[in-house]
Image 1: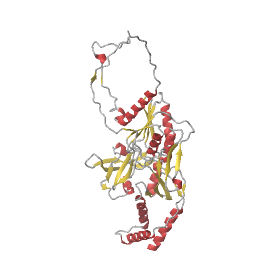
Image 2: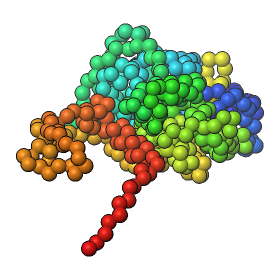
Image 3: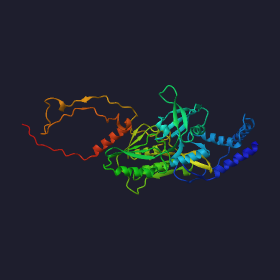
Image 4: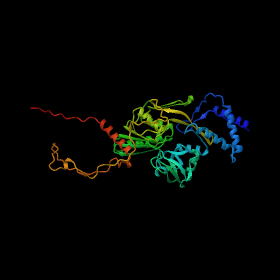
Length: 450
């Protein structure tokens, strides 16, 4: 048996190395072929050890396990040992990934990864059960329906979180700053992610939120931007919100940057294989939008979000505000093995136009603004000079009027539900607009000194 298995494994390995590979999805651009690197000597003793272990498990494990399951587990273990993003995709995982890139899938609406044997929340997706339940970036999921996560791999844990729309689930969460774990009840739903949405913050100032980079994100951005520009007021400034955006398709991020710059490099990738080296340039087919812009990022902004922020920062096209991004600067390529299975393999790193690697480093904002709760220190009646009896007049022939008033709402503690980062971004845009206005003519008066 070991000799037969050894020959089979060797044949499979050689076939995989020799076959052209089709690139399909996450954080890559289009289908193309990768030329394999020259084959090296296979480690025969290691393959013998593998075959022996395989045979011992088949013969001696307390319960019988079929060969297909053992081989899939071997592939899964081989990939998970490389980095947190390489993985084996069985039929269910492969289908989920395909649905994910089109914007509709089932579940709770959270991007997750593994950390120290627990599920770590990368980010909750906008307007999903997870986001509405208050799950936050950095939360550790330690139990699902009272079943401990420790010992399960990522796919097994994710499988426990899946289920029919409307079915209930309870997650046990461990959160930094809270001493004890707590339970969060949720109801599963069909997750349809609206990649791009927009609104008017104040007359003349627009807001665009990109929650994920999907196949239609570039087109949707154009529509939302045109909608803001078609409003009654001239668009003086724009906030592009990439906070807690976990990334998605690289091509979508390139399209977004291309909307705001006319020329130059957007991003480039480098890997071991010649075909992994790619450069993506801005297209000058039409004039780029030149609206003054602030881009918001945080620790949940990853991958394609970092490509956009890094490119706009390097081209000095936008002010980047918030906190340092996640730091996922690697490209995952989906390599189909059959019609219903594939591997997701890290094949390259990407770099900003100035040559910065984002991997494990992230994008440092131009202006650091931590998320905070702000409360007004003043309240009650405000008294001004015009309220004082016998106050001096304005000196221009016009009468002054009393402006005593109660302290009004509308400060940063009330703006956008207390979103101080968005409040600061809007203030910065207002300042940029004020400083860009033509200077007001100063009337000089002739005086003489006696």
